[in-house]
Amino acid sequence: MQDIFEQEMSRPTIFKDRNVLSPHYIPDHLPYRDGEITRIMKAIAPSLSQKRPNNIFVYGKTGTGKTSSTKHVLSRLGEAAQKYEAPVEQVYINCRIHNTKYQVLLKCAERLCPEESFMGHPATFLYERLLKEVAKKAVTFIVVLDEIDKTKDLDELMYSLTRSNDDLLQGHIALIGISNKIDFKEKLDPRSKSTLCQEEMVFAPYNAEQLQAILKERTVEGFKEGYVEDSAIALASAYAAQESGDARYALKLLLKAGEIADEQNKRVTDEDVKNARNAVEEDIVLELIQTLPDQQSIVLFSVATLTEEGGKYQRLGGGGNDPALFSGEVYQRYQTVCKQWHRNARSARWVREYLNELEMLGLITTELSGKGIRGQTRLIRLSFPAEKVLSAVQKRFAE
Image (tube, rainbow, N blue to C red; front, side):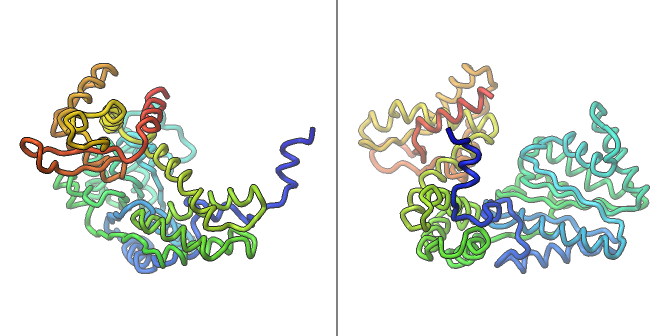
């Protein structure tokens, strides 16, 4: 039997470089983000002349180029610091992974002192060592906190890092916070908000025309010439524009459609994009559920179990075959699941907040009830098949 690896390496492919189709790829030029990149560069440029830059807060929906633009600026800053021999250091931290004050301080200390091991030391030691190293090197240390809203003790972390400059005789610490949640800063402690949000910028979603231009650039780099139909690019762009202008979604669609076409060594067509859409949406949902906080996952699980069983709204005849749920029954099921899973149940107010978060992520939809129901309540609908949501949540808690 022919070796599978040899077979894979020898078969023809329509791809030139799959990597450029990844949402994580940072191109040399980011279309339609020149203005935002210029603003970030101007904000941190004072660091090159040993002046303290302002803290920056960048927000916008997923796939609007926030992270790519920031990383692009950091790369340019590193080149400039080397050229002008400026004492500038930087660290990029994904707060979905490093989501506590301790973990952030640990990453900062390891970046400034890569030859040392700090594991096991308390947060106070890490903080003091961080300040000592910044002052010793008289360096401007730029800390980028991506998905900053995922940090559990964020106010405490912000207060420590932003107030640290008051204790530094030499050097500076500056922050760049990135969040997908437009209203995130409103939840910050007033002291944290005033120090973090010195300079703010919003990344607007891409429209269909912009997404199409982005995909065309990546197609030239990622596929062999003539293997992607223009109509397929236009369709993928249109689908992504419907999904809040998400460029990551557009790239995932194009890559998946390319993989489907590549199996048959043919051109990427509209039909491949249509087939890719279902697979990509399912992948995105499963990936999203895997990263939800525990309490949101339990609320989503409660919605999914009730959807499978059929809620009171259906049993009362208010929705026919419409799988809508009353908010009250969701809260009751949530309390039951918390007890079964040995978790502390939060108040109804907190569950309403979790439902808002899930709706913003597109996992559920909600609306106020109409006529025929006593009073006015919130009707909740699951946006994806209940069995898939249940499987994803159960897998998340099994890990």
